[in-house]
Length: 211
Image (tube, rainbow, N blue to C red):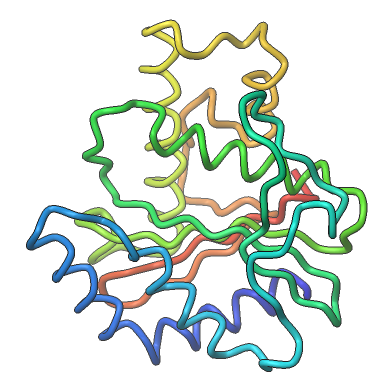
């Protein structure tokens, strides 16, 4: 599945499913929880895929990927589209972040991206970030990408100041490919990403085989 096809499907999914996603977010926010928000988005995305072409929660070995966390074995990918041999990982991201752990977002996002980037048995691989929160409303696709990138930059900078990131380390040095070690200077979307906006939610898809 090509990146522009991912963009097309995301656009349809948000147009048709945003109201339900917003209801879920509000219900979870009311009880100070975030569980299920990622799934609320991904259900809408997968509803636009032919059901015979994809499977969920497949082992990483299917795409020749490994889990690089030393304390974890196995692992799964969120979605595999069989006819185009495309692997997809989903993440829900509040903008701005309110979690107290400064690596809560940037760490898992970077790990998912790198795992897909290193896969050896896949033709396409995408990290889809479902975005919600105050920074997503009343913006443009370019500025949403800029806000996303700069949120990763701020979290990475804070993590570095706290000694949680060291660019001499192999894993952390990989983030240079995404450019998160520096702020995004403008509202230009890089060629290896697409951005889709609804009224109050959005999505950023990153081609993990491109950067």
